[in-house]
Length: 105
Image (tube, rainbow, N blue to C red):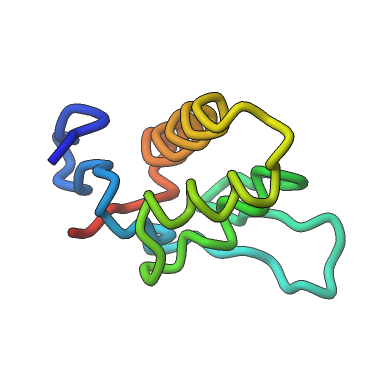
């Protein structure tokens, strides 16, 4: 199993291709009817659009990291698959660093 980052000192899980990312407690997406779509986190918010929104919408604890990558490689089929994968992994790790995501195996 390939680990994509070192374990978090907070015990928030490790990003593996077969791990299931989900929004951390206290974090949520605003309603679909509200625009722009926003990731609401304690004491801050992050506007989402395009690929960032596609990624966060799939961080529901039901999709693995690998499934998210495959889905977005299909959506963005004109982009180089390896580049899409690296961008997604980078974004997931950034969200975890911001304490917006947890990973479960």
